[in-house]
Length: 250
Image (tube, rainbow, N blue to C red; front, side, top):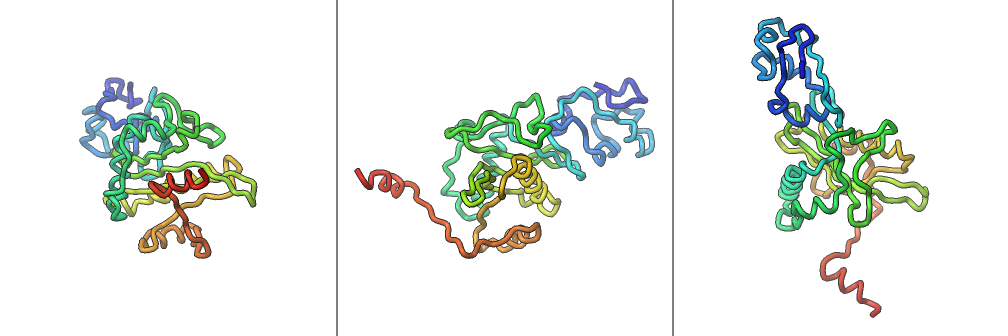
């Protein structure tokens, strides 16, 4: 798998590249430009930094979208589940609710519609291509990998419906970017991907909830055009109350 059009002997060992770069079908230029990169041959490393112009990725399946800073966004694959669970637990800890997390790898594997690891997770129409959505498997998850190929954030979502608009939409259950990865535009990138999907499916809106005390997140969301729904109060029935309600008329 040659990455250098002028140096035939410059070969890449796929096992030495982060999986997310392989999935995206390209490599981040800032990383390629680094002298001492383990996947560049000696001839390349002796050249001036502009030799990145001669690096041409080939035969790498494209299944993700690369951002301008080298990060990659794609729909989750089954092998991403440990990383997704870790991000869920980090989010719960940030929201002071770690003890409430019941998610396990097994539960995530059975309830998320995953993308294939050998083809693009988004079609030319802008709609995701994953396992079928069903009542038992209602959710999809976008995963963002940083410039080194490590999981840095996620957006786990499912579909809802507006009766007044008679149009589908997306409900964002969780958006999380690792605290060490913030300030790089990753959260905005995940929201952009979801907004594009809503438009591609002729949907009506993208919506989510935010904890009232999370002022940094509220300000961020408002900065990208979201509005607070102050006239609405969230309601929930779960655990014992859900069982009690189901038996209310028996």
